[in-house]
Length: 141
Image (cartoon, rainbow, N blue to C red; front, side):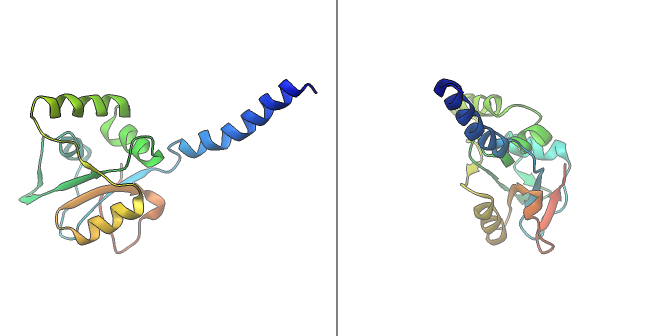
């Protein structure tokens, strides 16, 4: 086998697991602080697009994972029903014209869980596999 072909195969073997790890194979679920009731996809879309700021009478603080995170991709696909680049562009325009700021970004699902559990009104998405019985499930898309 030529060294060029060997390098190509090595590159593919290295890139494939990384690409698969980035695919949204784990569905996202939306959790909320204790006391928040279940919501539907329409309300989740309104909250994450800045068009709604409360669930019932309770003001909410939505949380995002960083761009490129597999669970964020799953959330964008299942709930927001748009690619992440369009969501980012949407918030860039809204912020520029003074119509709000995008949801706060946390680095990991563990950070989202901790923030939601200690912050009244907080909501955030996590991998379905991280859901525990003591968590307040708002939406399973």
